[in-house]
Length: 370
Image (tube, rainbow, N blue to C red; front, side, top):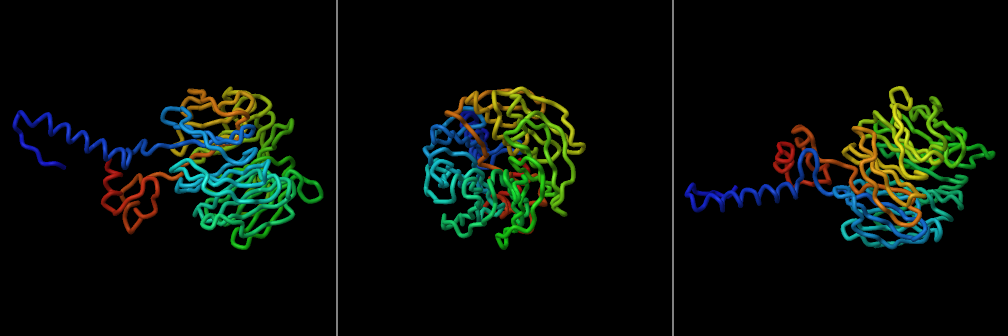
């Protein structure tokens, strides 16, 4: 800290310096409750763009041209790159989030739909609904390094927190039975197929124990839970009509499920898998993403061409953000957080954090203390 004297004519100057230094520190490292700007990225299917929403202001700050008919989107864990599945031209656009520009376009299979990135950021898995395959993109070379066949009408995809398995919802599985295929990411082979009834999107609980499968664009009211240890159906439960988009709070206590036929979001307590609240939102909710801090849920409402923002504290809509034409899915540029305890900085633990990142253990300790 700048050394200042106690003379009356320098007090104001010294106070200003201290405030400026504190402000710079907070900008660089944030605070325990909020640090760094968290952006939400929304695909706009009918105008071939991605809208960038600043979640501090809930305003669109950039619009990025991508390929034709963008649908699914996923962002690397360090927040540096967004992968966008362009359904109408069978490509994936790679966006550098620092500049909000497309830096690569990767050809994949026919009609790509869903995207998931491995936790280590090494690979992006893309479902090709029309090609009945999954393309595996090396995120360093931005090229397809593997294609997994016989995944019929593949839609949603999610990867376990340890990165060892990818769960793919098949709208037309083997023998035309809707199912979920389990991919071993080490070998890129299907190691299990689970019959689930109608399949739409998939989300994995934060602890990796369960995969929740929603039912898609059908007049049904259930979602299916898969035990990832045994790859068997654990149970099925009731949500609203046409449950589709889904995401979990960071502690895994609640799942937020969009009901496309009811213009509402069901809040499911995962301990009992019962609906404990319903939140009216815009028309036809599709993509859903919970903010990394768990305080808000962003819901893309396609027919309303907007994003509804739900407070998880009150389960009410606190803001509505206009999006592009026919918005579809959403992802956050920040999925990791800084340390919350001093022991996380020890034994080179400070090296594991990317948002914010630290140059040494001392910076990590200072962050926690703030």
